[in-house]
Length: 233
Image (tube, rainbow, N blue to C red; front, top):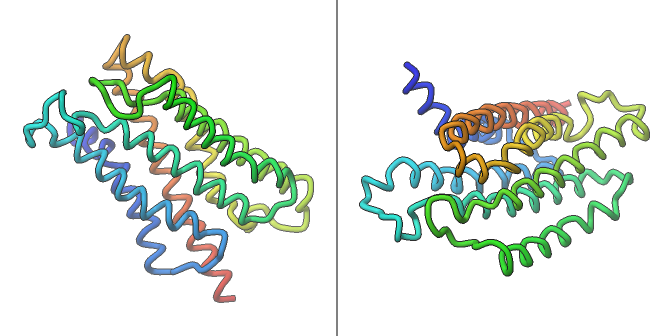
């Protein structure tokens, strides 16, 4: 039973995305600000499928530690960069005046950080079991996304007093994203250290990441459904 639950959680990075994907195909919400979220679902379905396939079948494929696909860490790095850029675009499309210039600059600052980090401090291409997973990158991405989420809620509280908070554009996406990045910030920050010092705990704590990812996907699905109702009114 524990094995089955563990496998379900291991593959949640793939099947959880099918929840908002189903609502997307069924409801087809057309709000402009949701375009980055729609792309997120499609792109990460491919990326996460690659992550789980490598983790599950690398030994069956005869892949060795000397091969490029021995670990899937580079896909987490690619996903981190894409996620930050897509959700930066999402928050910009919401057209909230609060801290608008800062939101415009963040993607460029982040890309500069990525270039410097992988040019001088960390390898982007996996080398060995753990190298290639950048705790620095994923923790930075989570911190920036958490900033975006906080400024979104501050705007609703201070400036947008006439809109019911639960029907505000993007509310459910931002709430799910806040839970996801808030829970994962410290996991990402210390994951490399945990993997080296206590691999069993590192593997176990990743279940937390998978659980909050499921919650995030459910909240995206709720947003798609609510946005579709707005279109039909």
